Image (cartoon, one colour):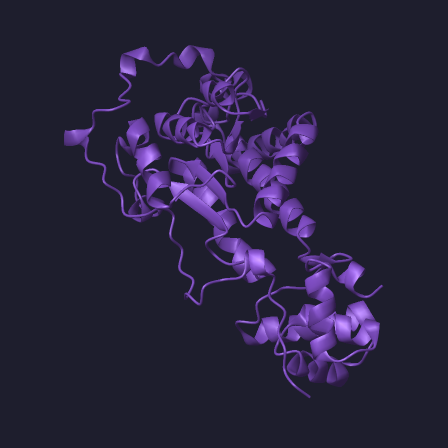
Amino acid sequence: MQSVRYSPPSLSGKGRRYTVRPAPPGRYSPQNRTDGKESALGINLESMTTETRNPDTMDLDRMTALEVVTAMNREDAKVPAAIAAQLPSIAQVAEWAIASLEAGGRVFYMGAGTSGRLGVLDAAECPPTFGVAPDRMVGLIAGGEKAFLKAVEGAEDSRELGREDLTAWGLEKRDLVIGVAASGRTPYVLGGLAYARELGCRTAAVSCNAGSEIGRAADLAVEVVVGPEVLTGSTRLKAGTAQKLILNMISTAAMVGVGKAYQNLMVDVMQTNEKLHRRAEKIVMEATGVDQETARERITAAGGSVKTAITMILAGCGAQEAASRLERARGHVREAIQ
């Protein structure tokens, strides 16, 4: 039987080996920062909920380790409720992501520090989980790739750098740009959002302060107010947790929307190690009820494509016909087997 692997045209890769690439090479240096520079004296920290002191942890330095982690756990428990109030807006961002991907566009996350790292992390996890090409979900971090591991001082203060990073990626109108900043005022993000809107891209902003500057700069604001941190101003804590949960929602809902799941199974999983080979077989077994040997045979016949193997079994057809069915169904297994 001929081996055929289904690959949706709008989401197919370009044969490149995947590496984490938070941004094209950075050009920032403190000495040449000019455009969009924001003076520290102009930042009103008092207006930001994320910068206020938590009255329940005023004696943090006197707490035992158990008391510290208990306080943190209590504060973290507030995050889901804060997110719940923003679910309609989060869903709208996911729908925009689906529309961009189906049009052959891309989804860009932009952020600095913790927010930038979370965007890079979410984008980097999409290729192995969903089989999406690495240039379809992109994480940009102020200061470039090196900033993922070590802070690049001042990079976030340049609006021009945000514009330059998107320009280097050849931003197009069909792309979606999502700015992520706990404070809601990061100049790097503001510069990127402004450039994206100039090109006619849809834009969204994720922050943890109400009435945020990036929220006003975007088409849609997702503002999840989680309250003061256990450690004042350390937004890698509750704010970072909230942002991670939101990005999980956006990317997962978007991938489901473009056909990367059947039932609740990840049918485009990349089989890059022994564990994932076994997972692929298990997915086929769960979806179709066949035994492991049959699952393995069908995956091999399908050229390694879990999605194609499932369609072959459920539609009772060969690999070529399964691939054609998936093509007509835009990658959705449920439609392909009807």
